[in-house]
Length: 324
Image (cartoon, rainbow, N blue to C red; front, side, top):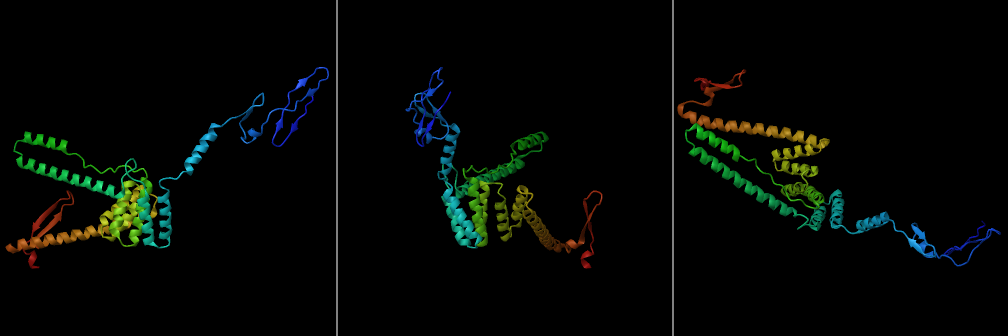
């Protein structure tokens, strides 16, 4: 067969073919299929007999277009993220007051409410109410225990039954479980960042509150533990500072700075407890001497000796010790 084809930029002409066995010659008619419309549709085109054109749409292309639309649509957190970025920029430049304002605006711009989650202040209120109820339960339990001890008789059987009942009623103390926030991790960052500015501004109490909120939103956020630890140390609450430093190490064991800080605070806390012990013993000694003085004695008349085998102590009396 011998073929002839004519091509144009916007029009492609395909001709019907007529074949004669004797001459073996093919003839083409001029009017064929107009594929100009199909050219715009790219790949996935079916050419139909009679001149029709069908464009085939790829399902993957549709899905990609939908995803592109979703990604281009504004997120409820876009404004908060923009304000956080401005706050970070001011914080790096040392403009802590301006950074504080931007972080506050980022917090306020973050969505909250039904279906999303409570605000930071609402979280604190829920926590405080829960802890207050827990205190009331503990006080009620202590009151009942006191009444039971007072009403307990000498019967061993009754005593055993009461002890068994007490074990059943002795439930572990409940801990507060905050409601989930849809944007909790990001909101936790805004509060922790604001806490950082408050530390620079010397507002340690407010910094602790922001870190509290941050950790209610994200209980494993290491930076919030570190910043609350710093604030607690500044107000000489080394016990809480050490606890937060240890938590930071627990959630980030590879953090060398956190480990170093925890070790430093442990030393400070040990020294504080030792000093407190000495002060307490001194006060008890003064009290004992004031009582024994009525009998012409003092605590110097008594000596404690530890038994190396049992670890127990024995007290010996030396009447002339106070005269030395």
